[in-house]
Image 1 (cartoon, rainbow, N blue to C red):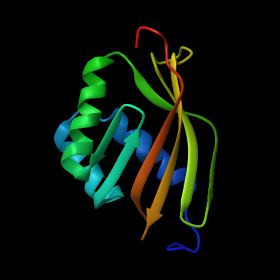
Image 2: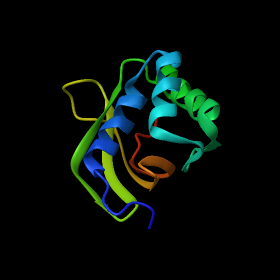
Image 3: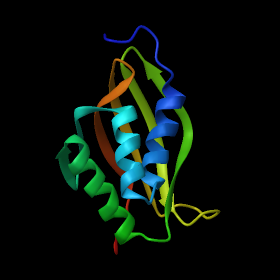
Image 4: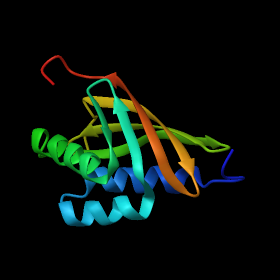
Length: 125
């Protein structure tokens, strides 16, 4: 265990803010502030490592869903160096057609890795 106590909600909020940031330069800055340099992101559709690859992945998702934003769903949970939270991706103010749950590993207050699960994906997505 690397962190005696982590603020799971803050980590989840910063993660969602990163995915909603449209400016690639600002995203890169957020990545350097909240993720370790060699952090990894893995879900059923992608496996990337480091700020440049994570930044490019986020940019690609934003291109594919230009009118959608991410929002937290439900309670953020954390213990030790682990954080779990669910999110929705969709138009603001509407039920999100894409939903998932992510698990973060935290090291020294920054994200070491994210393992994501897609809980709901429309057929056309």
